[in-house]
Image 1 (tube, rainbow, N blue to C red):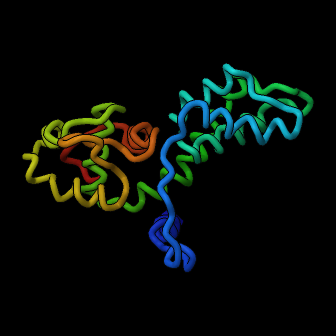
Image 2 (cartoon, helix red, strand yellow):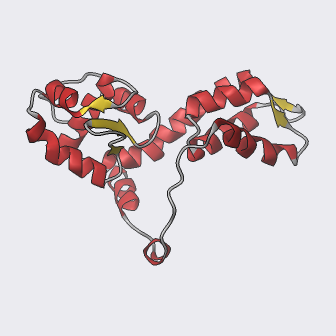
Length: 192
């Protein structure tokens, strides 16, 4: 099954080959609030301000994640309530993360070679913020030049990007947390 999911993630549909798509980055906080609020207002429901803050802070405004948390928060809230609360948003996290782990993150992970997995796991080990390429290489026990091809492959696959010269970060939020759940113990010597 995991091979099928990985292959599906690598394939391009006919439509993808015909059209180019603009890159949609993370939403600003106000745009994220609007994206969550407008669809539910049409049904006489609203997110509390605290719920919107909780979802934004967790998702970092990443559009797909906003949808995921909004969907689960909506389903957790009682059918007859008019407000989705911060507790609903917090409770949506476990379901949202489980779904992302099973689908969104799994497809990304399955596309990686064992050495690429080592690189991204080392990056995850260093924390959420952008990290220096040299620090990742040190974590792997290698020279920067030795891991430069891995870095380039991962950038080409859309897993990481360079927000500033010499820095590396994940392209999607929460991927580092998935990697730590998937590979609980980091070792530069292990094959993942």
